[in-house]
Amino acid sequence: MLDTVTRHAAAPFDTARLDRLMEEAGIDVLFATSKPNVQYLLGGHRSFFFDTMDAIGITRYLPVVVYAKGAPQKAGYFGHRMEGYQTEIKPFWVSETNTRSSGAVDVMQRAADYVHKVMAKPKRIGIELAFIPAASADALRKVFPDAEIKDALFVLERLRARKTPEELERLQRASDLVIDSMLAVFAGHGPGATKQELAEALRREETARGLYFDYCLIAAGASHNRAPSEQRWEKGDPLSVDSGGNYHGYIGDLARMGVAGEPDGELIDLLAEVEAVQQAAFKPIRAGVNGSEIYACAEGVLKKSKLHNHYEFLAHGMGLVSHEAPRLTSTGPVPYDGYDADRPLEDGMVISVETTLLHPRRGFIKLEDTVAVTTTGHEIYGNRARGWNRAGG
Image (cartoon, rainbow, N blue to C red):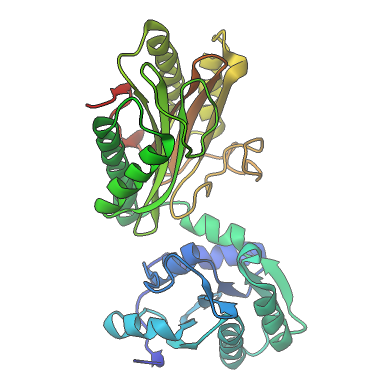
């Protein structure tokens, strides 16, 4: 198993864009430590051993990509000894790859020592404050006690904001597979199935199609509770299924509706109203349009509804991370500033659009879609099964 590899190849991302973002943020050298950003910077690497866990012994797995502004030839990767198997098969583009570490402190020590060697004493260091253990941050500060530590989350988020064709293909694939899995669950179950059984069936369907199952938010009947439980899906009941399935790190996040039996006239009208909000929100999406137009168009339809006080509308960025750029609102359930609300959407951005009706009698009615921004408009991924999907096919 290889411990250290020294090489240099072309970076799999726009280094000029990263250099500019770092300059604007006042960052000289970057230490990326979150799985999504490490994957992005390395061109797709995910540790097979730590893909679904981080803890090991008395420490945890911590991957570290080091990038110095204006010097991609000095980039390095520092990881766990188990990753040496993967670097033998597929070396990384960076100049230095070190997979000798066993935990979160020794790996940061090696990364910091490498930076000290190749660029002496950086004055401004960018780290992912939300994704670095305190012990690792302390190890970094010991090597560079006089450096200013800054949060690099914004820089890395903006770097990932515009998806490549390969990324878009993976997001589309993830969305299609989630819809296929939902349709299989609707077709294979009927009245009497519990929410726990339905969620477990969805996990199996997504896994069988090559997805990593992330979650299933599921509501049945008049209840607004979306946790899997022993509640049964009864005849005539609506069923809301909202699931995230992960395809090579990229998230397919969609919501569709099922019904045990035939939907009555009221249910048909309610879902049609939710669909009308979705379609209105889709309409302005294209490169060059301010993100706030999505909300303006959706709210124009919502204001006309007699049930407007029972609606929730949300649009947020999607990709390797749920609720990444573009950030379109400051008042959503995940707290961040609406940085992109008054800025033009860009080709390659991907947005999750979701409309939820919390009906006081008929329950939880929701549609959620993944929408890619294009120069001429938009493309909706997984654009199927938008009506009432009957139990048993």
